[in-house]
Every structure is written in structure tokens, then in C-alpha cells.
Length: 149
Figure 1: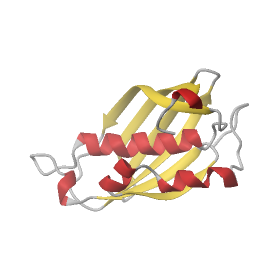
Figure 2 (figure 1 turned 90 degrees about the vertical axis):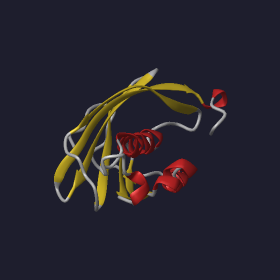
Figure 3 (figure 1 turned 90 degrees about the horizontal axis):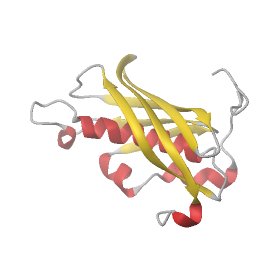
Figure 4 (figure 1 turned 120 degrees about the vertical axis):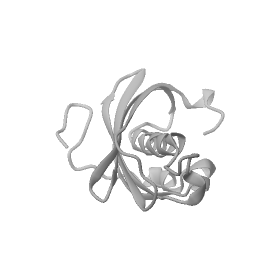
């Protein structure tokens, strides 16, 4: 990943950010597993289970969006100071391929970290083939205003 003034090429997750690995109860309920995170990026997986299916038998778009949102959230929180929290305020997702079984891998990256907003991107792959491409904007807010943190 090319570095700009907001990114580091050799990222390492700070020790005080290790709780990010746990994820949310919602993510764990969906079967989203933490694989790796560096400062500003994350890698998650999700084994496709029967309850992920829509009425046609494909993985529901909401499950795929939850995977990318979780991945982008972890990537972003790995870069935020403890006095800031974040909330998704805009997102765009391209569903590139329908999937019905197997494992999905989501890789997310911070591409811009400003003083009020952050922009992230995520790719979901299955067996090396693209399934989803997403881009999202997050509002950065004081952590004291975020009751979930």
C-alpha cells in the first residue's frame, strides 16, 4: 500500500488497540472472524452459513455489507486516538458476484483520515475472485458522545 501523509507503509496495531480483535456481538453473531489488523487496515473472514442466504439461496446483501462495514470499522478504529469514535455516514457497495457457499475474505483500508471524516475502502474476495467492492465515509466524533464505546 502506498503511503501518504496519513498512512504508514509498515503498520502495526498498537498494543492498546488489541480489543479491536474481539469485534462486536453483532459481527460475532454473523460469524465474522478477525484475521489480522495493522494500523489503518484489517482482514476479516466469514464462512457462509445457511442463515446468510436470501430467498434465492445467495448470500444476502445485508450480510455482505455487514462484513465490509465491520472490516472498515476495525481498520478505522486502529488509527483513531482513544478520544475519538466513528460512525458510518455514507457508503457505496458494488455486488460483483453472487455467492452461495465457502469462505469470504474482507480486506479494508483507510484511504483518508481527516479531522472530521475518514474515507475507507473494502474488497471482499472468494477464492481470489472479487465479490464486493465498497467505499464509505465515516464521521469522527468525540468518544464521550459515543455511548457504545
